[in-house]
Image (cartoon, rainbow, N blue to C red; front, top):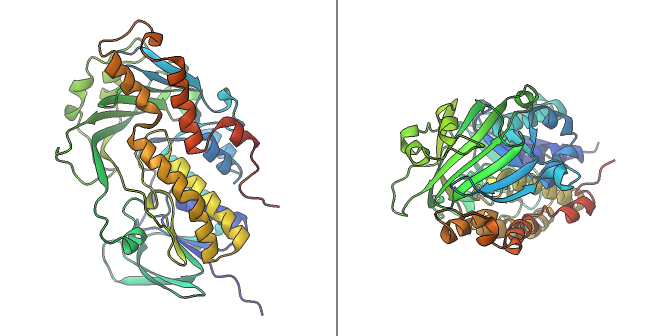
Length: 425
């Protein structure tokens, strides 16, 4: 009697881990997902999914469910701290992509992926309250050990073919092979993130960034049901950059933020298209988060183990890339497993493609990515301007936008014409 294939073991049920689980199921590979938290709740705030990532979720059959809850972003617009327009470009299908760009609540996206994984893989395929506590590997397989998240006794052992660490910026698997790496690297910026229900602004499906490198405000709607009712659930980010020796605390998306720490610096940001202090005051909740990343690693893969998403390449939230790159990781890894089997060779091939690609994005985001045009305006015209052409040339603006799209893998023509990452059926 033929023995069934051993499963691929995934540590982490975030966006990357769940996308990988769904992708492996799509190609007929057994999978088990283990998550440290005891219950997954729709926590967090908004994120953007760029068209190359949305394409992959659509090819997993999730487009209708995404469209029911997310906003198809129509445009991205940059403004000075005075509210004057710097650059505006269409996004998603409005820009000619075959797939939309979606703005969505991160927790709602995670719950959508979790529900799809449970429905397709079965109830026992995703196990909560299991923290990766160690593993052993041989030439033919791997055995992973999981313990209570709070340091309790070992409670489960799983044997499989491969182990993927999709367990975030504090990845246990990453730490195993990089024990002296230390804490994430802080760039001096603190983000205060919140969600506010208010009247729509600009097109009603606009994503805006105002300010410059040292003080910035980002806002975009994230709820399709609210949009259909003529309202906007606005995800917003207020950012301030401090001196490198400024005291900061361990990053945690769930730490409450205090308006007194940042609202005074935004009190005069009242534009004719958005009242920033009013949006901040009306927030349902506010989280505080220092902007951190890690240096790119020379290796993600060690035998039958590899990393994915924030465990592999945590990056600054610039250019709307974190979740999108995790999704692309998952799909490329599944493609390589489909092509090369549940083998170390598949992990090596995945890393050969994704490690250098994501390292370039990490470093570009440290240089402020496409948002660098806002700092250029601040430096050249700190007191405002009559016409943006007097400050930045059209060529500078266009290259900042187009160059980043090429770097991040969502150049329109390349994306629209390339074949699917994974062939099924």
